[in-house]
Length: 231
Image (cartoon, rainbow, N blue to C red; front, side):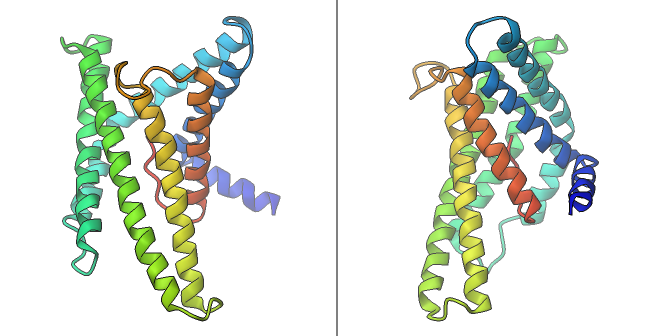
């Protein structure tokens, strides 16, 4: 069993998405520990610095994600015709927000390193707002799907039937998606300019905790065959 788990980990780390999930989890975990330890310097400061560098690494690697996102958006299009209209609309809007997020983040990064002359903070704010919008749309979509699944479950009187078990697995996946997106949305709002809800009010350990929770859920969903696009 240990050998199989090791092979699975090795296979995951050989892929771009799997490596990104690992780096994300490590970055937020370091921020959690570094923020929870007392003292601004020494080990806590080193852990926070390492977390920031890993986050910057992910930002650079996302320079190559536009085409993958575009392929996903084009593949979904306006959604399957047999899908609920509201679910389709929320999914399309979520794809649009995610698609626009990448070039905005790229411009912010390019402005920071001096490739383009622009106010980087404006582009960072816009990219964060787009990410938060995509997360909110994803939560609303999952809530709608969850209501549909619960309605179907009530129609199945035999709870041990394969169809009921499949529906319960889908319910669990949607609940996890809501928790993951809610944790990320909390951080996204924190990174917006001060004055909007709780923007700028989270201590580093809380940002790390929420990000770690989201990352672990994403890794679990990926291992179960789910699809996570956590930023």
